[in-house]
Amino acid sequence: MTPEEKEAQARVRFFALSLLRLAGAVMVMMGIVISSGRFAGVPVPVGYVLVVIGFADLAMGPRLLARRWRTPPEA
Image 1 (cartoon, one colour):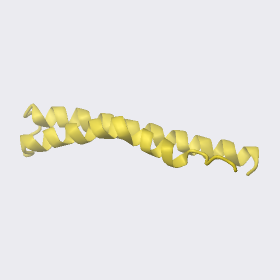
Image 2: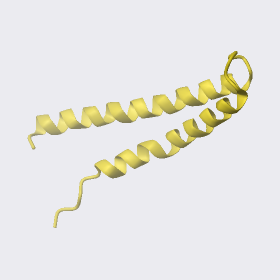
Image 3: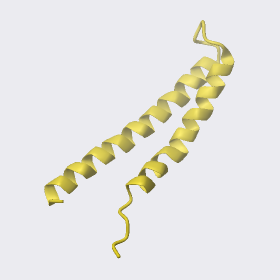
């Protein structure tokens, strides 16, 4: 793999990790808004579920992707 290809791959992976973190933060915020009852038409328990899923996404998502993308040791 050429240095340009490695740099392009790193940029794409950084962008993916950033989007994953942003999605988790948005889920947490939407869950808080929904669970406070300010979003009409959506049951409050849905908000609680979004908060839990968002926190799990923030905590575990980037780690799982980084582990999957880790370079295997050369033998």
